[in-house]
Amino acid sequence: MVIDQMNTKYVQWLSADDMHQQSRTWISELNFIKDEQHFFEDLITSYTRKLIETKKFASHKELIDSLNESRRTIKPIIKQIVKHESELEIMVDGIDQLEEEAAYKDKHRELIDEVNYFLKHYRNIKRQLFGMIKEIMRTEKRQHLIAKK
Picture 1 (cartoon, helix red, strand yellow):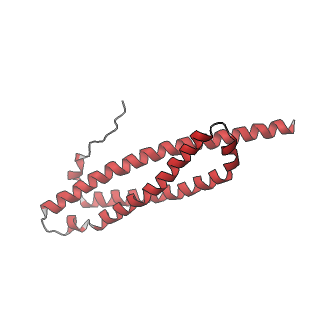
Picture 2 (cartoon, rainbow, N blue to C red):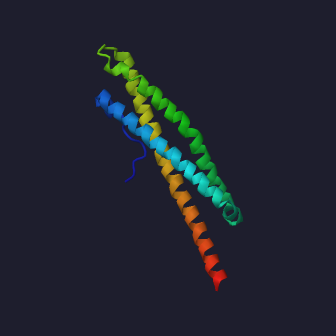
Picture 3 (cartoon, one colour):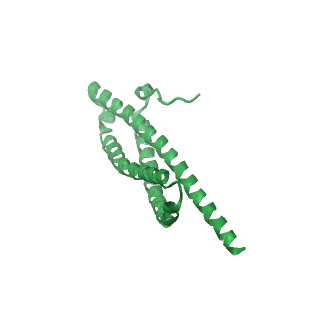
């Protein structure tokens, strides 16, 4: 059974340290993904001619467009998380600000959903990209072996 939407009500019991750690983890993961996206772009560039020559060019182009869209999406998400983390002081300042603390937790819930959606979507793109490149490399290898005979 696959659950698409997480129940994020548990955030009300997370401590400020837990939320801080989760934010740091998100930033680390997303920065790694940014590097990974650069790798994919370089890999795609090196196989551009083969991508264009295949009969699946339309689906390949759609996948590459999805990768580019994820690159545009990741920067605002990271900015939101950094801003959210800088506002953590509301939770640890020792002053009871119930409305502000509730708003902070609500924002954290929203970020949980947004980051989880992005990660799930990106993993799907990544899996498809590896499949696409693997297929092209196999075809290239077959053609090379046939040419040697």
